[in-house]
Structures are given as C-alpha cells and as structure tokens.
Image 1 (cartoon, rainbow, N blue to C red):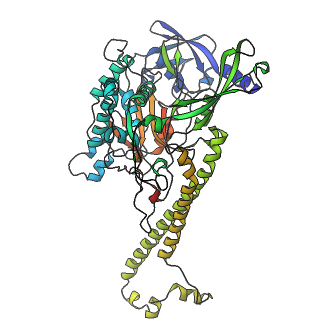
Image 2 (cartoon, rainbow, N blue to C red):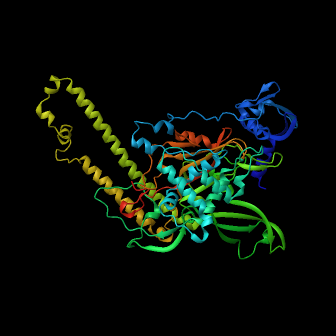
Amino acid sequence: MTSMDVDSANAASETLIPVVIRHQGKKYEVEVDVSEPGAVFKYQVYSLTGVQPENQKILIKGKQVKDETDMASLGLKSAQAIMVLGQPGAAPVRFEAPAVKTRFVEDMVGAGQSSQDMLAAPSGLTNLGNTCYLNASLQAMRTIPELQDSLINRTQVDSENSGTTQLARQLRDVFSNLSSSHAPCIPTRFLSTLRSSNPRFAERSRTGQGFAQQDAEEAWTFIVDNLRRTHLVKDEQKALPPALEEGSVSIATTVEDVPEEGAAASTSNSSVSIIKRYMTGEVQKTLSCDEAEGRTDAGPATTSESFLTLPCHISISINHLRDGLFAGLTEKIEKHSEALGRDAVFTSTLKISRLPKYLTVHFMRFYWKRDIQKKAKIMRKVTFPHELDVSEMCTDELRAKLLPVREKVREVRKEVEEIERTNKKRKHRVSEEKHAGATSSKGGAEVNSTPDDKKGETKGEKGTAEGEDADTEYKTDAQIDAEKRASLLKAQEELYQLVRPRLAEDRYANHTGLYQLRAVVSHQGASADSGHYTAFVKKDSIVDPKTGRKSEDDGNWWWFNDDKVTEVGSDRVDALAGGGESHAALILLYGSVPLPLPESRVTEPFFTS
C-alpha cells in the first residue's frame, strides 16, 4: 500500500465512528462518517429502520439532528447509543424548485395548444407498482435514435428463436406508443415479458403486497444484454445523398452515416446487432504480477474484452467521474502464478481500444450490507461533466487516432460559433436601427430637415472625412457571410478527409473521444430495493423514429417522474452529483459528439440540421 493509500485509510478511520441505533426495541450497529452532514446520517438511519428522513426525530446530547447538522460537532463516541423516534412509512418526494417554469404534459395537451407544443411534450410511463426503476431506464434508453429506428422501422424477427425476441417486440411497442401519443403509456405487456424472461423482476415485496422494487441498473443491463443477443437487423449501406446546394451548411451530423467515397448503395444479407454496433466498446486487459519473481521475459499477458458499461467506483478519495472511471480501470486480483507455482496478487489494467458511439456509465453507489440484508447506498458527492473526454483512458494507438480529429472538431466548432456570433450581432444592429428609425420618425420636421446629400452618404465617404483613402472598398454583409461559410465548408471537408481512414476501419465507433451527456437515471433513497427512480433526458435527445425530427434544443432537460413530465434547467441535472441530496445519479448515458461534416457526406436523417 502506498503512503497515499495509508493516509487515506487513516483519514477514513478518524472520521468513521461506530455507534448503535435504537429504534422500537431493535439495535443496529452502524458507522457514522462525521465528515458528512446530518442528511447523510438520516439516510443511513432510513436504510436501517425504514423511517423516512422527514419523519425522523434524532436527539444527541439535547440537539436534534437536521440535514445541515455538522456531525463532527456532536462529539460522538465509539459504541454510543442513539435513540431514533418515528414510524416507518412513505414520505413526500422532495425536489428542489426548478430553475425554469414547470411545464406538465397534462397542461400541454388540451384544446388550443399548437402542434409545435404537442411535439415538444414527450410522454411519460405509468407506474404499475414499484416499476419506477423500469420507467426511468426505458426513458433513458429511448434517447438512442438508432435503437428506436431499428426496433420500429427495421425489426428482423428470428422465427427459429421467436421466444427470445419477445422483449424486443414489446419494447418496440412501448417506443411506438411513446412516439405516437402524448398521453402516458402503460407498459403492461413489456413488464409481463420482462418478469417472465427474468424471475428476479417478479419478486414480491417483503410484506407480500405487490411486487418488490428493483435496481434500475440491473434492469438496464438485462434489457441491453437481451437486445444484444436477440435484436438483429439487416445490414444495409446507404446511398450518397445529392450534392450540396450552394451556401448550405451542416453543423450537426454523425460518424457512421458517412458513406465510403465512391461507394454505391448496396444491400447485404448479413444481420447485425444494434447493441454491438452502437453500445459495445472494447478494452485491452493487461495482467502483471506484483512480485518481480512472478514476471516472465515475455512481459505481461494482454487480452481483449468487450464491455457494455464502464463502472465509476466510489470511495473516500473519489470526487469526480474521471477519478471513478480510472479507479474502475485498475484492479488487484489474486490468481495462480505459473512462474511462482502458487497464488499471487496481480494488477489488472484496462485501456479502451474501441469507443462505442453511446457510452453507458454506472455509478457503483450500492453495496451489500450484510446486517440489514440490503444493497445500501453510498451517498458521497461525485460530480460529472456534460461533455466528457475519455481519450486519456484509451490505448496509445487509439489516442493517436483520436487527438487530431478532436482538435479539428474544435476548430470547426469555433468557425460555427463565429458565424452564430456574427449573426446575433447583425440582428441586434438591425433591431437598433429599426428602433432608431421609429424614434426619429416621431420627430417629424427634424427628420425631414436632414439634407439629401447626408442621406446618401456611404461608409466610404465617411472614411474620407476621417482621413481614410476614398478608394477603400468595404465588404458587404453578404460578402462577409459568403467568405465565412466558405471557410467553414473548407474546414468541414478537411475534417472529413482526416477522419475518413478511421471510418474505413470502423464506421460506427466514436472517433473523437468526446461525449455529450444525453440522459441520467437517478435514485432517491438509501437502498437499491427502496426509494424512487427517475430519469432526466436532454430535450434534443428525443428523436421521432418516423420523421427523424428532434425536439427543441434550448439547454433544458425533461424530467421523467413516471407519468409526470417536467421541464427543468441543466442546473437540476448538476445537482444529481449526490453528497447528501435526496437524488443522485446512478446511470449516465453519453452520446458521441457529432462530427460537423459537409452535408454531402451525410445520409443519416436523425442528425442532419
């Protein structure tokens, strides 16, 4: 163990105080982290006693423990008994007030609403009794347009194995209903198929009344793995679209939609797994013996493995997603050493060798707590970015391919931002001129008194008055626009030529190392089989599988709380980092940052601007 590990372990032992919780004649032994606020301790109590934090009354040395209480100030001692009062039961779901005005689906489907508003309001899913874990997972999964497209428009049924494709068929129906209606969808048949496919999701609650709450991550993993094995579609090449019209610009496209140069439309009889194509990554795994005598001249053994999810480990030293991901890429394992002839400790190191277009990250927030026979929750605050760069977690070979493309993408972004900035300035200037004209027209005679020669004065004539050369030529707005758009198109074409060799190798991977956050599955409560799951989805991540139309991109998010759908600001998503808050992120779904390529290189209907 390194000195840093020792220091961390010592620091942890100093802040963890073992105490005894007394509630209704029962005793529970638990370690209290006095470096955390009272809200964390109250959720620990909740996981043990079932008493919701809102219903708890905890007195320690005459002081009542509140959410903001500094636990270190209470002077807790080892084995100290703490009395907890309160009855187990449900409490109201607590959420912070959204930064923007709340908009409910029910309020937007009435008479008098425009079709645009109707399209902007996605549907929720009805809770069928402790099924919030499933509803949240499906809403996040729906943000993968290729999955929706393959299920609804290109489903290929395996007649010899029709039983295993039932889940895909039912998911297709759920996605179709969510896209075709703005009323809440009731996923009864999908839930029934899920429970028959995996009896775990058919477990009854401990009271025997209704079904038990389940872990959203386990549901996500089972559904994705089932689709990986059973949902196959015909592999088709797309034709090159018509050439660019003069002056048109595309600023949001995707990697896999770029046809190979000179390739005509063709159809293959082979079938592919959408999950494998878009959501599966690969890593190189290196095993090295920690003992020098156990290493051979051939060097450490390296193997390749695939993954559907990257774990984010959480410990006392983890504060950011990047730290947790790196912690998940290194592991100590014990196995037999051929060189030593006995068991030894090996270090397993993973480096990403293939980045999927959609990257799933799992916060390892739950661990099995033996004394309560539950998966308790780690409520440490771990922040995560809206744009994630994972290039430093990749192999040297892959990183060398990613970096040039990433830098060119950033260059094109600057070009786009410059055009947008110029357009905003021009609109502002025109608006001011109109306002000034309207104001001066009220002056009547004063405006008419302006000499005719002044009215016709040009910018060049003004320059002469200020000592500039009368022959100076000034570019018009149209000329400036044309130059900037030509510069942008040139940069986009350079990007295409740069990324083209990567597309020849793997047309469906992430070729920049950059990801944008699309969806978050959050959990409220202190254990996996209790509490409440919801989903937060970026507004422009929802695509109509029939029309390819995206929802509005204004920086806001949809919050899916079962059948209640609310619009919230991005700061509400930032608050899901945890750390004493009732809601914390459990699953993050990232999508590849779109490649801003020339429109003539793109055929995908979902992401063309």
